[in-house]
Image (spheres, rainbow, N blue to C red):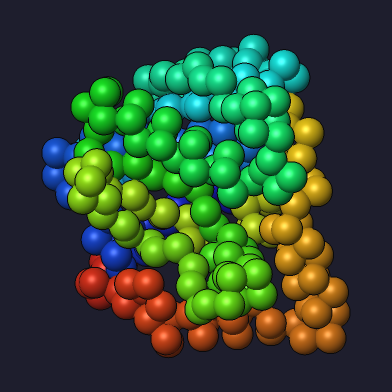
Length: 245
């Protein structure tokens, strides 16, 4: 099952020229199923890609009391990848000080900033996030419905102010494939402890797509294809790629 994920990850890496010789890549690991799987996939890609690159896993500890750090540490020990846990007070800022009524966007911005800073301190020039195909589609719809614009995140983004590049190697993997791989590998998703978990605008959009899929089984592939054809936010592949794993 990991082979199917590797095939899609390698295709995305090659299509969008995500990895070069000498890179040191920080993989953002929240503890959820997506980020755990990405770390294992990137570890395996080190064996197959002609480009030689280093890896370090970074977890941003948001400061929630119910965050299961012990389970995270067991996962890291089994992965064999160097890791770093960045302690922050983001939860207190978002919920106690700011008392954000819609906390997810503000929290995500703070978390990304902490991730970028930690990666730079550890000598990384790239950060890999575990956004998959469903995330791409959901962000595309959320931007239109809530922001009135046509937008989704890019496969590769260079942040000139930080001099760091963001990559998203799992953009070709559907969430159902991610879930199957997680089950097959026996991975146990680790809860963040966030009180807003499962009660967000993204969850609403996810449920909406699920309802629409009952009438149109091709809705996800149609939306993803529309993003690629429109070349939104740098979605045009930069290379033809090599043979998949």
